[in-house]
Structures are given as structure tokens and as C-alpha cells.
Picture 1 (cartoon, protein in one colour):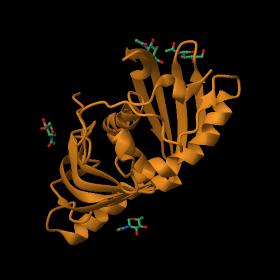
Picture 2 (picture 1 turned 180 degrees about the vertical axis):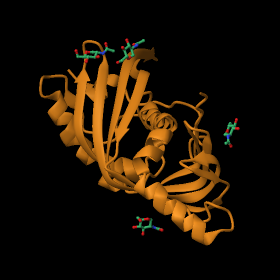
Picture 3 (picture 1 turned 120 degrees about the vertical axis):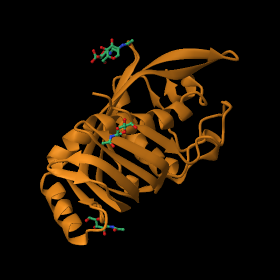
Picture 4 (picture 1 turned 30 degrees about the vertical axis):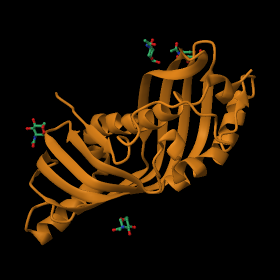
Length: 244
Ligand SMILES: *[C@@H]1O[C@H](CO)[C@@H](O)[C@H](O)[C@H]1NC(C)=O
Ligand SMILES: *[C@@H]1O[C@H](CO)[C@@H](O)[C@H](O)[C@H]1NC(C)=O
Ligand SMILES: *[C@@H]1O[C@H](CO)[C@@H](O)[C@H](O)[C@H]1NC(C)=O
Ligand SMILES: *[C@@H]1O[C@H](CO)[C@@H](O)[C@H](O)[C@H]1NC(C)=O
């Protein structure tokens, strides 16, 4: 089985160099003490709305909506869903449920929820899904409801100009959804009635479609998280992010 996924950010190519900065004031650091995890969840609430607005100094693009140039997903059972000009709405509802950092082995887990994530864009689909042979294209609306998103990362320390920075290594991602709604008009090209029927069946069988897309979608979501954390960590000195 080959599973490939591509995800491109609209803004990621703007800033290529890593310029160190001091921590923005909305990132309130926590002490590496037993109540670190509780503090991190609390302070994430402060930081997230600011990060969602985007921060040029961190090269973090605005994320409400999050714009992606393209997102290619490959189903495990031989179909491809290629999306472009994507806008993802709903990250303003993101809530960090849990953040557990282990400073001994330098690993962390973050668990968040987003009540309603709305993915809009244009799509092309080819291949077979459930019982259908698909060849559609058109506007796309996929809604992910009550998702739980888990991001795991390990880090190592990297020294530049006498200052230590965290560097992500060995990251992974997992997610669970409560419901998904698909609206892919024209999924059977040129046949409105059949397209409507196929969408209805996709919605009724969203769990199967989700499992089919899981590996590919997981890789894409991991790439998005890696991109964001990977922009912040190399720019802000470790000792400003994590206090003794
Ligand atoms: C680090 O320690 C935690 C808690 O003991 C454990 O769950 C995690 O798997 C460890 N991670 C690594 C990379 O060793
Ligand atoms: C899906 O895309 C892959 C990679 O581009 C390609 O090899 C494969 O033939 C495509 N499958 C379908 C059903 O379009
Ligand atoms: C997308 O689908 C959701 C769920 O069906 C719906 O509430 C929403 O209005 C749709 N949005 C657009 C822009 O089509
Ligand atoms: C990567 O993470 C996994 C799971 O947490 C762990 O088992 C493994 O040892 C880690 N690998 C490296 C190179 O740190």
C-alpha cells in the first residue's frame, strides 16, 4: 500500500531564514515544576487566539481560517481526494485539554479538541470508494465534528550563537472524530441526482471513509502541527519558553 500525502502552506515559503527573537508577550512560559502541565494548558488559552491571528515574527500565518494551497489525500482503498484553495474554519474553537511534558526524556503530548472544523475548497476525486467509481470535481465542504487531536513530540536541544533552542524530533499524530459531514457536489461528474445519493451514503458511512483516509489525513495533520511548532521552537530560546 502506498500512502502519500502532500500539504502546502500558502505562507511557508515567505521566510526561509531562522531569525531568533524574544518570546512574544502572549506566550506566557511555565516553570518546569510538577504543576507545569496545568500551567501549560492555562497559558495555551492565552496564546492560541494570538497565534491564530498570525505572527509574522514567528512566520506563523493567520489560521482563522487556515489557508492551504493544496492537500492531497490518498485513500487506503484506491481513491484519491485532491483538494486546493482550502480554507479551514473553526480553529478559534480549539481547546487544549491536556499537555504533558516530560523534561527528563524530553517528550510531550498535547491533546486538543475542536468542536467544529469546517474545510472548504475545491476538490477532484478519482478511484473507488465504498461501492462507487468516482470521477468528480467541484466545491467541497467537509465538516469534522468534536475532533480530539493528539500530537506527540520529542525534542532535543540545539545550540546556536551560545543560546539553546528546542528542536522537534520523532513526532506523531492521532485523531478521533465524533461525526463527519461530507458535501461534495458533482462527485459523479455531471450527475446531480446520483451525486446527492453518493454524498448521503458517504455521510451514513463516514466512519468507513474516515478509516480509509486515516493514514493519509494523519500525515497531513502531523505536517501542519510540525510546521507550526517547528516555526516557534527554533526562534525562541528554550530558557524563555521553559523556566527553571
Ligand atoms: C518519556 O517518558 C514518558 C513517561 O514515563 C513516557 O510515556 C514516554 O513514552 C517517554 N518518551 C520517550 C521518547 O522515551
Ligand atoms: C492516486 O494517486 C497516486 C499517486 O499520484 C497514483 O499512483 C494512483 O494511480 C492514483 N489512484 C487513483 C485511483 O486515481
Ligand atoms: C458546510 O456544511 C455544514 C454542515 O453540513 C453546513 O452547516 C455549512 O453551512 C456548510 N457551509 C458551506 C459554506 O457550504
Ligand atoms: C520515538 O517515539 C516512540 C514512541 O513514543 C518511541 O518508542 C521511540 O523510542 C522514539 N524514537 C526516538 C528515536 O526517540
